[in-house]
Image 1 (cartoon, rainbow, N blue to C red):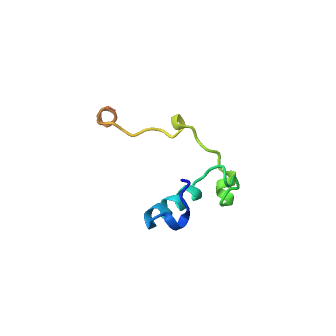
Image 2: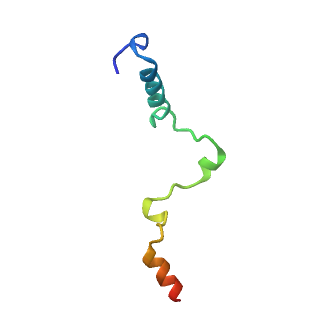
Length: 61
């Protein structure tokens, strides 16, 4: 991304702006009080989706 801004087309400029917006190193401050006080969950803590087998087992109970 060493091109100057004036040499980029509109889509390249938009992509470059989005890259700057989502850069995690740029801003570590939370956007809201809720974000600041909520603990992030690990992937295994999020739960899963029910499969057809899970539904059938539940129906038998």
